[in-house]
Amino acid sequence: MYRNGFAGVNVALSYGDAGATSEADEKSMAVNYTMPMMDGNLKLNYADITNDAANATSDESSGSEVGVQYSAGFGRVYALRQSTETKTAAGAKTNDQENTTIGVNYKLDGSTQLVYFNQSVDQDGTTGTGDEFSSNTVGVRHDMAGGLRIGLLHSNYEYTDADSASTNDDGSATRLEVRVNF
Image 1: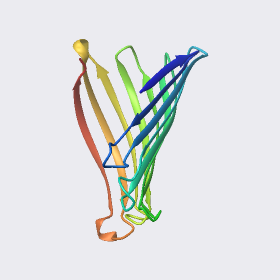
Image 2 (image 1 turned 180 degrees about the vertical axis):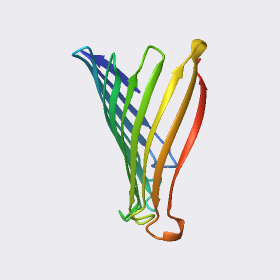
Image 3 (image 1 turned 30 degrees about the vertical axis):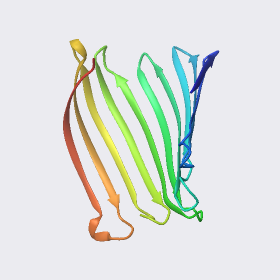
Image 4 (image 1 turned 60 degrees about the horizontal axis):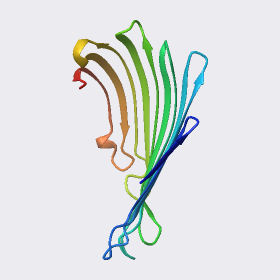
């Protein structure tokens, strides 16, 4: 792995040789850039990973992620786009998934924040073509001494199975989260 940083830009490159009996080498790259903006920081991220096919009849896969975040005294605003893809040796996409998340964390005080995020996932390719999932989540999180976080989050979601309407699902869920950071 190679890693370097200069003037707010960090770059990491990686190559994994699968060995003499496989061609499934892995290549990855990550770049992020952070710069001061107004009273906070703007952060841009890009990551990419590719796994070659192990042999002439195997599948190959790849994924990428692009994100932007602005954080300041109020909290943070962010957007993230992820994609994964699997192709057969003939080049047909068996999996082609796109995931988009946008959100806001608003600080009420030094330890309490309001949270909102929207997630949208679309599936194409030959498996699950046309499947869709979306959700909206709103809640509150409170950080306590010793790394303890308590949160109450409520989500509304919708899942559409393009192949079988009987497995479509719409609903909501409320969860209490307790987390300890070390």
